[in-house]
Structures are given as structure tokens and as C-alpha cells.
Image 1 (cartoon, helix red, strand yellow):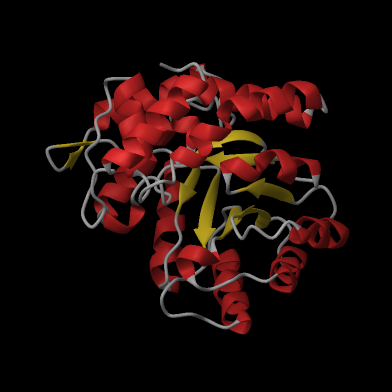
Image 2: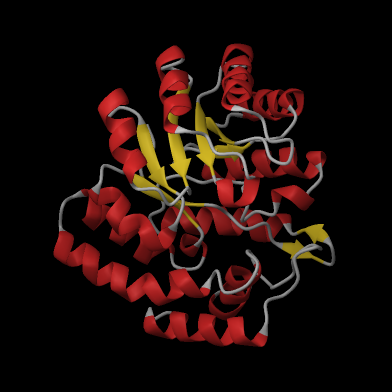
Length: 293
């Protein structure tokens, strides 16, 4: 259902408010540059510090900007099941094609709790879900046996996973149990080459915010089996992939976008702050290596 280069869109701010014109322009530019889908309100979109009203407005803006050209996978996850349900229903009503559903954070549910949480949502809202497993941020890990059970229970609802666990063995476990119809999407730009080689079908990407064409070309080459081209593009992007996580995200990627685009600034919301001088130097070097400066 979903594959290729999928930017986890930043949320542009201007004087503390969402810059709606810049967000719309960003979404349209991503499509023009070859991105295969859009994700508003993920981690990179600073979802923890946007209000519910802002979140739903971003869904609306993204759907309108996409205009049916690419799918919109709305960041709907929450550590409260009823809030997650609310986000999903709004996303469906606004025309989003799927929901990105992070594992509940802070309250640390068991695997049984995760099964109950995602099962309830699958039964409550008629919207496909892409699970989002990022235990480094949530502490909670959606184990392979849980992913497999959910996808078997709800094959029309649980359609894929964004995996940022860093555990490549999960690709094979998921693939052997669920086949190739279950979309395995990488959550780490610097691992995307190896992830696709193991059966992945794309990346929900931070780097694509600033280098969408290169990321789309990389994904196209990788998924087509043109490994010489994929390696070439991966090595062109690799220093930038790493530089964008030399400080708390999305500080570095917003800095990169301010350097390359000009119409998106560095403004972030507390407790995120602008990236350090050391991070800026690393980003500048990564941009130069990628030929973006």
C-alpha cells in the first residue's frame, strides 16, 4: 500500500504559530520532488508540542495540499487510546489514507496491552494503520509476535510498520509470517539501504524534508534492484543522515531547511531548542557533501 520515500514533515512555525503557508508549500514541493506519500504530525513534526486543534488543522492542510496525488499518513498515535481514536476519526473524515500509530509512550503497556490498544482502534475506526515502533523514544517495544498477531487479526487495518527499533532481524520475522503484502518501512534514514535489502519497501524519512529528490531517487534505485545507483546515492546522503541527529530533532533538519530553502525557518517549540554550533557545522558539511549547498 505504501512504499518509497515518505517525508515525516516538519511543522514550520512563525512567531510561535504554525506557518500554514509554509507547510502547504512544503507539502506541494515534496510531491513535485518525487516523494511517494506525506506524514504530518509525526515526531519530526513536533507532535508532542502541538495542540489537538493544530494537529487536526495540519491533517486538513496536508490533505488539501496533496490533492489526491500521494497518500497522507496522519500521525494519530497517543498514549491514551481514546485520544488516538479521536485523531483517527478526524483523519479519516478529512480524507487521510492511513494513520501512523506510535506505541503508547510513558505508561509502558505490556504486549497484551498493546494488542488490546491497537485491536480496539482497528475495530473502532475504518482507517488503515501503519504501526510505529520506536522504543528508543517510547520505551515500549512492539515485539514481532505482537505485530504479527495484529496483522493477522486485522489484515485490512494493520497494513504496515515504521520500524525504528534498529533490529534488522525483525524484517525476516515479519516477512516469513505476513508475506510481502505487509509494508515494512524503515524509520532510520541511515539504515534504509540495508532495510530495503532485507525486504523493506521504503523509509519514513527526516532527510527527505531537505533532500526529497535525492531520497526519492535513492528509494527508486534501491527498490528496483539497481544497487550500484542505490549505493552511490546512499553514500551521497549518508553524512547528512547522520548530521540531522547530532542534536535533538527536528532542530538540525529545520536548520538545514533554513539554509537550503529559505522559506522555512529554524523555529522550534520548547523543550526543543535550536541546534548547537557543532550540529550546525555537521549539517553544513552534510549538505555540502550531498551537493545541496
